[in-house]
Length: 137
Image (cartoon, rainbow, N blue to C red):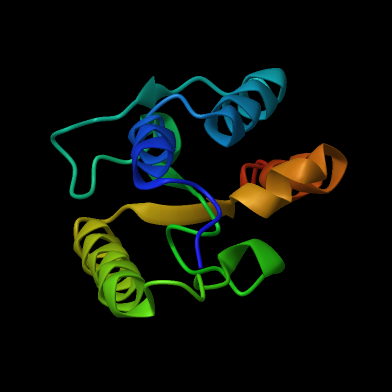
């Protein structure tokens, strides 16, 4: 059972943002420190990617572990109102897959960064640096 009243829960859920979230800001900062320049939330691309690195033909989605059903502890489905949450979260996963396929078919490389990865910025920086390292000739 939910410990919050419906009014308080509604206020909490209404405060959840879709853009410029803390994890997204962390990823943007790390990319910028790596010397990469990017655009944000390009509505012309499927799924409106969080970060678009046109020079590298790469898009980055920064996914919240809960909202996109990551396999970490933050991605657990709530025990209360499962009949509401299961279809909602499953639809998010399907939508993510559809957007990923559309972007790949347009020639974009798709990178997903999970919210939990932003808790270890050193590891994430290494991962991102590896993805955008210049190819050896």
